[in-house]
Amino acid sequence: MIDIHQHLLYGVDDGPRDLEASMAIAKAAIEGGITHVVCTPHANHEYEFNPTRNEERLGAIRERLGGKLVLGRGCDMYLSPANIDEAMENPAKFTINGGRYLLVEFASFTIPKDIGDTFYEFLLKGIVPVITHPERNPILARDPDQMKDWLGSGCRLQITAASGNGYFGREAKACYWNLLERDWVSFVATDAHHVEGRLPAMSEAYAAIARKMGEDTAKRLFVANPLAAFENAPLPEHPEFQAAQLR
Image 1: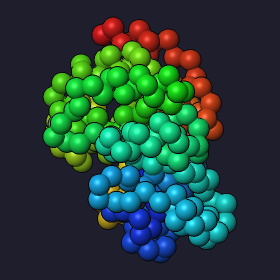
Image 2: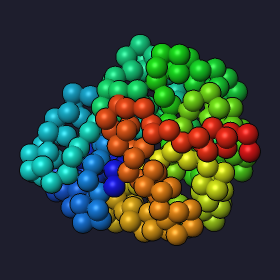
Image 3: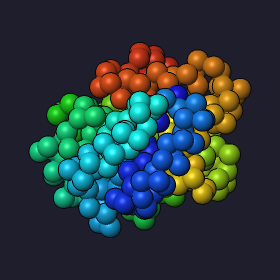
């Protein structure tokens, strides 16, 4: 399985504090069947996003892992005006492995009315916005239909594996399964921060989705689509996704 959203880098945000804590997360990911991880530190008002420092931390973790886990770089980008402007000018600073896929997150208290225009501008530049954990955003969870136009224009959704078992509450769990049933989801990821609670665990979620939605769906959300994002390739064709935008 491939995890495109994980806070593995130490000392850069609210994830692991030091290299040993990063190694504990990496070990848990490997033991849980994860083969690739995109390291996605926050870029928001609280945490400075520093690519040079991030690359140094990434190198230190890679050296300790000795090839046991394939690591990439990315960002969990808060949709602030400053970040949007910089991502328009220099998308490779924020995107997954410098490619086309950009993880973006909303504040939990407001959704900008013109954000659809921003997504359209991103898409014109060849940047694919991947909206992270919408099921955990109370505004989006209560009214998922507001995402329909964004999906129709080319945006994608990434939900959090642990939401499916109720870890983030009943509302998030209900929205998680609703989005899956509507075929609106392109990625499942862990958004892991620690081994104390926010674990890099995907196998339970994979099994639950495979039981309810079918093995092909689980493979698409946990392997095929994330691998395409990791490698900056187009997502595998999935006609039901386009049809689902009408539901």
